[in-house]
Image (tube, rainbow, N blue to C red; front, side, top):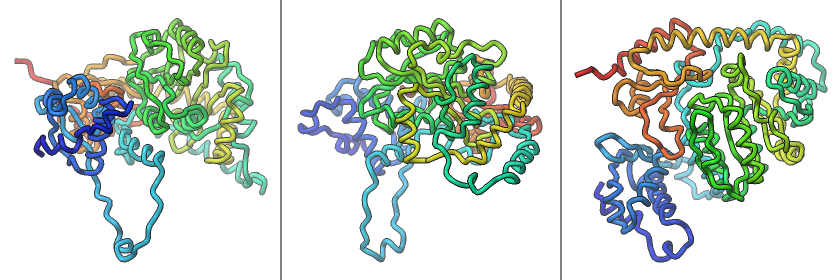
Length: 490
């Protein structure tokens, strides 16, 4: 595609220049819209940052920022030696034959729906389907005690009354909330009133409720960089300003940021930073609490992977160190038991309980009572504790086997990363290219660069191993070894 056509598509007029919107945002939105509409087609090579800057008469740093944003949102991709190319495939919205024969008109979808629709493209795991090798975040599904669960389910339905089939409290069953509060007191040294526990369908559901309860347009949310892409997409769809914060060996470097009066939330995964696997030190947790207090904001502590990464020598949770009710604690049984369960929970500061419940009651209402009751029996009968110890043992065994099978093609910088591991490639292949090559052969490996808010280049892959049995492990790692051979020494 000729560069002069691209220039015309994104040329800034006088009216746009007179607005208060930054130039880089105007250019970013113009290129993004042109790509979505198919005016700049898939695989089009874009001008270099210097050439485009000259063509638009702006600074090169402005275009660098634009390309960073487009790369992060996966509309373009940087290919070594080939510059930047469009990676978003425009799908023509063909009308059905029924629509062609009629003149019916329909309302436009909302701006918020468009934001969620656009940002759904940015997730890392839309392509997994039923393949589990090597999808991060899955526990050893094949060792889940299905017969025990079936027995508890049969007991529930045997004794069920018509009342059990009616509506239930949005915050969850009291019996389950009490058991979760007791579980956290024993295993995480968390003291909370059970009334602060709200049952959700998982961590993302919790984040959705929190975000809609607290975030207004242009409120700031601080995210670790790299971070959980779905969390980032959610906050972007709520029109929050995202502030990336880098990490070091102690966790999020919060003191590197200037205190921001518009910051409402800090989202962090301190037990096992997602995806890098860093454990936040106790001192850094205290620093984070001090910064949040000074900035008048709240901390979301997502402890999604505590049992797998922090079981033997747990560091105190940020929630347990908090003296001001500034921490919202998230946990999930979906990664501990199985994703189809759809039960998670949050511990909310008391002043947020009623607003969150009001939002919950007018949206998804409640998690199915049957699942809550069966899980409660599973916990009360000691089955959860037994299962946790079993899956930790199995996961550790499978991690060793995976690392052994792939030692010729991967370096592992962090071996203590819960249900996933970061594998650094021993050749010079780009991690996105490696992901695409493996995906064509039914092997899932997420590119590490997709987790960075600024679209950082990387040659790392994020892989899960614990859900893969030994037979499948050998078959799939043989494919990895064949497709990603290490670079030969000269």
